[in-house]
Amino acid sequence: MKIIVLKTAEEIGIEAAKIFTDEVKNNPSCVLGLATGATPVPTYNKIKETFSQGGISFKDVKTYNLDEYCNLPKNDKNSYYTFMHEQLFNGLDILEENVHFLDGNATDCDAECKRYDDEINNAGGIDIQLLGIGNNAHIGFNEPADEFTSGSFKVKLTESTINANKIYFDENPMPEYALTMGIRQIMSAKKIVLIATGPKKAEAVRNMIEGPVTAQVPASVLQEHDDVVIFLDEDAASLLKK
Ligand code: F6R
Image 1 (spheres, rainbow, N blue to C red):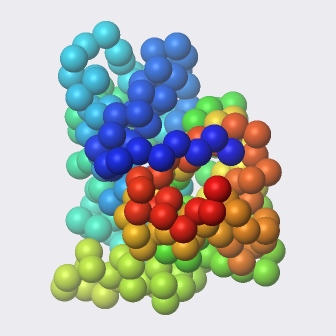
Image 2: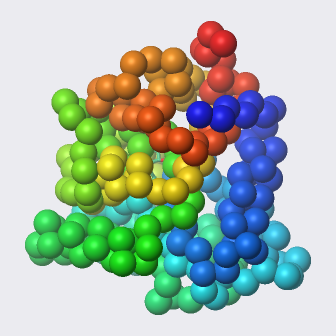
């Protein structure tokens, strides 16, 4: 694991965005794995800024998002589909047919998860996967569990995740289920960039980096990946011993 501690979320956004825009410049038809939530927003802003300055196109880039809520209309303001369009895709020249999500409204979730995993594999796998981390060390929506998951699957969200995300749901209750890429699918990405900012992430970050590899700390599995870059601000890094 390569661990980079920077002062602010904005500085992290600049450095993380550069990894993605350099990849797109070098490999214009690359496959990117993307995350939602508050953490990647500075990175997405910087990617859009770099795009607006010219000299880079996302027309041949394919993206696959990590997860999507179940039983939430695709165009709901809280769907991850809406989030990604508002925070990133609408500011790029990426083609709608090249952006991919799990369908949280599928009637047959197992078939939907298989379709998604097959599509990622047929696209050649993910070149760079962006991750945030939950307060409970989840990645994607892989909550603490007895064993590491494999491909995409339907998950019941834990109380910790519901408490962290329900602030976004004002009128309607937050969905209790989501579809998410599984741990082994995430681990098959060629490169992984994880960002953690703020004091609420400090314990999860310590357990991810300095604790044992265990499915109770889903992000700890990243210790076994040979190309992981972890960007932390000083708050998120505050409990690290080394
Ligand atoms: C989002 C995702 C989650 C988030 C995590 C952190 O697609 O997969 O694992 O990365 O819940 O969320 P924020 O960034 O809102 O703290």
